[in-house]
Length: 150
Image 1 (tube, rainbow, N blue to C red):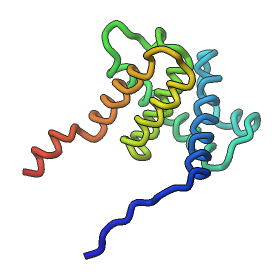
Image 2 (cartoon, rainbow, N blue to C red):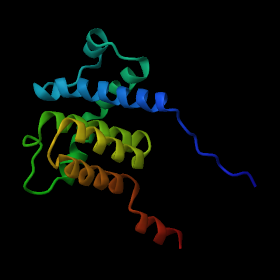
Image 3 (tube, helix red, strand yellow):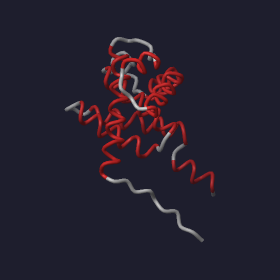
């Protein structure tokens, strides 16, 4: 029986992934800052993004309302969408995209690290909590999955 091998990435590849995430988050942030609807065509014309990054922005644009709803339903009662800093909203939107479209565990960790770069406080804890809850909503908790398999 063949074992699955884990893909390993070079430091340069990891850095490129990180830069790509930050470029996308910064685009989303520009729209969140002014409470504007994301416009992928405008982003394509005004930002120097790679094709994959544009496709991600298009996906986020199409699913923005769903992502926002998921984020809002996981916030504690004392938090509202409007109360969140626009950069924090951008990180949460992109993190929600990654959970749904990519690998949840990696997404949460990366968004925590990016949050620590942009904020000096404990905002990363909020990002961790919200994205963890979204991951559980999207895929169920490990405990639920274990019980279903037994």
